[in-house]
Length: 166
Length: 106
Image (cartoon, rainbow over all chains, first blue to last red; front, top):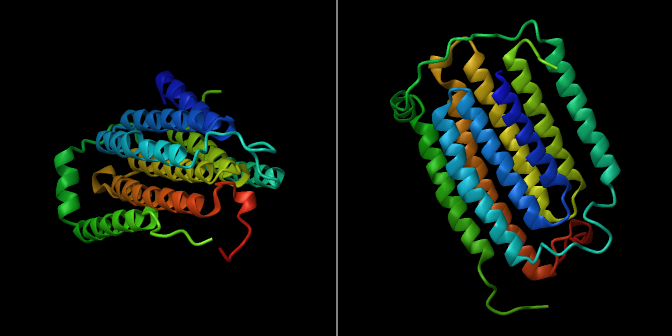
């Protein structure tokens, strides 16, 4: 991992932390898009150009915009009464810290056994395309169906109710 | 701290991001912020896939890369449906505060 990668990783983690900790929801959306962009840069640093650009297109381009739309449609940028954290925030923090401790321990304990190939893999986008339409064609079709169904479902779920019953 | 194995460094970054996302999903009250936390967790898993693909013994098999690409697609579908649900819940209950959503019956 080069020093530049460490900087990008620090930026990504800082973006994630800010997304979780900031009070204003719009600021959280901005911070999480920084984290997504940092992850895309990490993918590029790992010689996964296709995944990096897909990450930029899907996350920075689409998911971040979706989040901003949802925040604006729900007036979620108002800071609620009683703070932004739930009543059981301490339990959640303990669980997250425990998960990180277990994951970090597992990585550090197996550091000798981890593979460490240094040569960059020579994989072009053409190889990825051949794999997608060859060996992985069935998952690709299923994902296409899933995306279509999810898009239609999201539109139907978010449609205006005809008459409000309350 | 410089970690000798680059794979271990990436795995630790991914573990940290996963923990941050989990903390966000478990502690925030706004439903949209919970979804943001889930997205961070999915992204951390993607970083693991890509790192293992890059430093694994057979990168030409493209397994980790494919898994990451499909995971990105599924996460996009999840985000669309999840945020649609949040908008609909807001229309119904006039709030996105998860602490107030404690009724199964509308």
